[in-house]
Length: 205
Image (cartoon, rainbow, N blue to C red; front, side):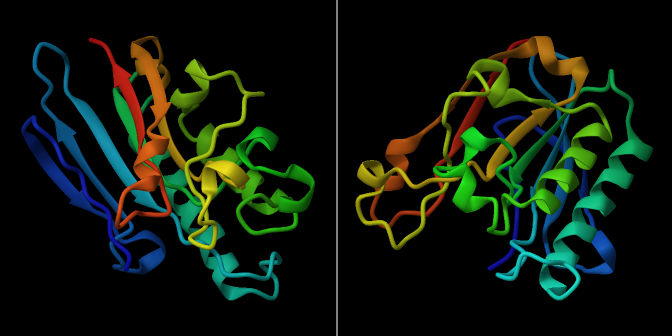
């Protein structure tokens, strides 16, 4: 069920399919998007491995693989671009870094996706290009924001036991272009539904 894609109304060029940590498993694609009336933007779409259940990479090979994937991506970005380049990173990063990104920070800090290991790895990725969290540029960091709810929650809006696993980041060169950001929560109610809700970020030229 792995796989990522870039859908665009604008022309794509120089399409890349990356084999992170030596595996061809469809978790990282990229392309230049030729945007009308603006400079081109490089878009990277990622799907970070979930990491399994045991929150210790020393005994959980899936979790260790997740952290290796993130570090591999960080090395790639640090060696490929500069802070002023027009680059967007988006996708299911399978990590909720802030206390307000999960429904219960204390409980979830022991769950993969919100452990200290996860948060440190995501911060290494963020620092690779001084990435800017586009959603948190618009929505204050202390405000709860969720993009994923378990299929086990039939009344997900009532319980609101969500996580913010899906992210849109931009390089500092695009920071001033971030005009709006929102999670389309109602899509989670569609039939059939994904357990994720779309994240929409609008960039101005």
